[in-house]
Length: 312
Image 1 (tube, rainbow, N blue to C red):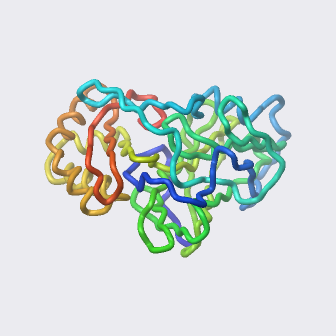
Image 2: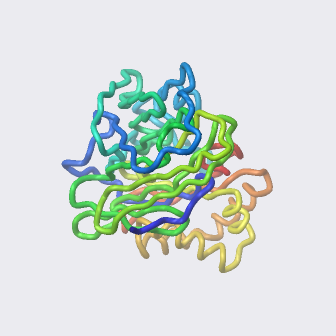
Image 3: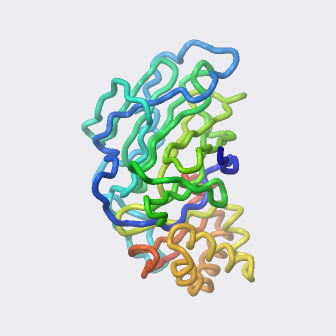
C-alpha cells in the first residue's frame, strides 16, 4: 500500500497533460457511485434530515454550472478562459443507482448517510465530491482515476500523479481536502496500491459538524494546468531566495517534468514579486500554464483571496 501524506487543507496544484484521450472515463456522463472502503465511525447516528448531496455542493459553489469557465485574472488583468473538462476522470468504483443533474451534467448519488456528486468542479477540472451526512457514514471512499492501464504515483504535499500505460505523467490529483459544515478543515489522506488506478480517500470526522464535504479532483484541464499555493507556501515563496525558486520549480515540474519546471522557474522573479503582493494582502499565489507537457509554453502568476477553496 502506498500512502500519501495527510492534508488538512486544500493545497497546491501543479501542471498536467492537457490533451484529450480516447476511452477516458467521461465524468459528465458517468453514473455516480460509491463504495464503502473502510469501517464506519463509532457512535452512528441517523442521517441528517433533508441533506441532499447536490444541494450541499451547489451551496458551497464547488460545481461548474456552465461549459464556459473562467480562471482568475493574471497579473496583467487578463481573464483566462479555459475548457470545462479534464482528460482524466474521477469516478467512484461501485455502480449504484444515480441520476444526472440537467443543470450541471453531474452524476448524483444520494444514500442515507452519504452522497456523491461527480462532474466538473468550478475551476474546470474533474471531481467527485463526497458529502458525508452523519457519523454512521463510511470513513473511506474509493475512486477509479483515468482509464484501464493508468497507474498512480505518490507526489509531494499529498498530491498523486496519474501515469498512462507507458509511464508518462498525464495529470495529477490535487492534495485531498475535507471540511465540515462550519468550514473546519478535517484530517484526510489518499491511499492506493502500487500499479493500480484506484484510490481511496479517508476522512477523519471526529468532532465534525455534519454534513462534511471532501473532494478528490484533478489539477489539469484540456490545454492548461494550474498550480495553487496555500498561505504558508505563498509566504515561503514571498521570502525569495533559493527556497522560493526550488518550490516553484518542484511545483511546476510535478506534471510537466524538468522542462516545464525550468520554464516556470525562469519566471521566478516575477512569481516571487506576485507572491509578495499576495502575502501582504492576505491572499494566495497561483500559476497557470498552457500547452502540452513537457513543453508547457506559457505561464502567468495570479492571486486568490483568502477563503477561496484553494487559499487556506
